[in-house]
Amino acid sequence: MTNQSHGRRVAHSLGAVLPALVLALSLSASLSAQQTERAKRLGGRMMCVCGCNEILTACNHVGCTTSHAMLKELDERIARGDSDDLVLQSFIQEYGPTVLVDPPKTGFTGLVWVVPIVAPLLALWLVWELVRRWRRRATLTPAAGPEIPSDLLARARHEAGRDSDE
Image 1 (spheres, rainbow, N blue to C red):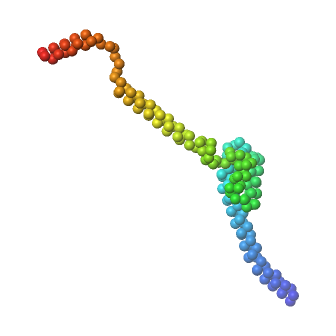
Image 2 (cartoon, one colour; image 1 turned 90 degrees about the vertical axis):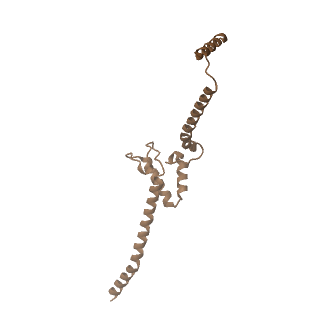
Image 3 (cartoon, rainbow, N blue to C red; image 1 turned 45 degrees about the vertical axis):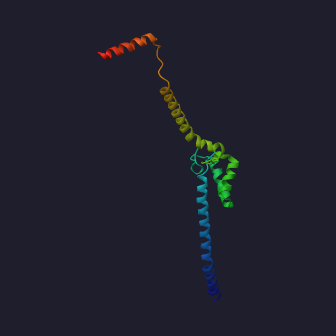
């Protein structure tokens, strides 16, 4: 009887512990999946600094030790519970602002985004204004021609008047 009662206690204990164990494993898997998704999202916002100009999670160099080290560091920071901003700032401090796929649009980098749009528009406006001023100047000033002596001008008027009388 002791074996049966012992077996029942073990079965009863397993019945109570097994659901808790399954719940703990599923929570752990869920957290791991969330961390993996977060790592993919953050890795997609960074560039591999090996010189391939690829996104960190898409670096396709065979045996690229740089991307592996960066991804390992990213996973460690996420497992530690660092915020997204803190993780990105730590990578910026370590590798510089070129590690970001989309650098912040402030200071000089803001000009890099604005100048290609504003410069052609400004050039177009300047050309427009220059042409407008040239045309205005051409209509205001009469065309310069050779000087006609007054005696020839008087003779032409006299003949023009005589021709109209006929």
